Length: 214
Image (cartoon, rainbow, N blue to C red; front, top):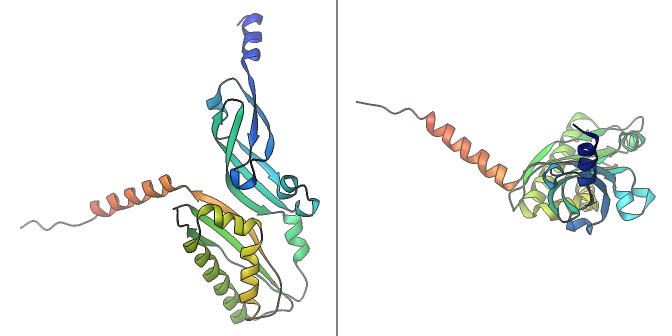
């Protein structure tokens, strides 16, 4: 390839401004470059809630977005993950107390599948039955939140701390708690992916049906 061809290819590359989803006010996440718009699709970008809101106190929350649309010089994203930093989670652990975790997969009212991982920290050491009761409360409230909310509303409740506050309010009656957090929320499947999985499952079930032939 000649030097002129290489130079032409470099000139053809364009910069795209990466924007957060509308629920995050289309905040600018950064810039990325590519010679074709399609090559931008699928790229991920990680930032912190602190960077988005201009509040350093929120830098312990990481947010990951994926580019799913390109228009002109803008690259639009969708939310894919909310996660607390390891350092922050370690700072919440205390000797003589319990850390209770749960892993809950929910389907929102608009058919997004999301895994949510709440975690509760007790004031003192809880016994096994108390930990089990706290975990059950967390699971029930997360499932209820998924059943009643759209994907955007569910993620808003996670990011804004409303879901963790609701869990704290209920679970503290089981055993005294020091703090409740949503340590991770991950988009597992979009509506079209969920529908495709269901169709595949139905087809597989039909294939397994035994037909008696007389």
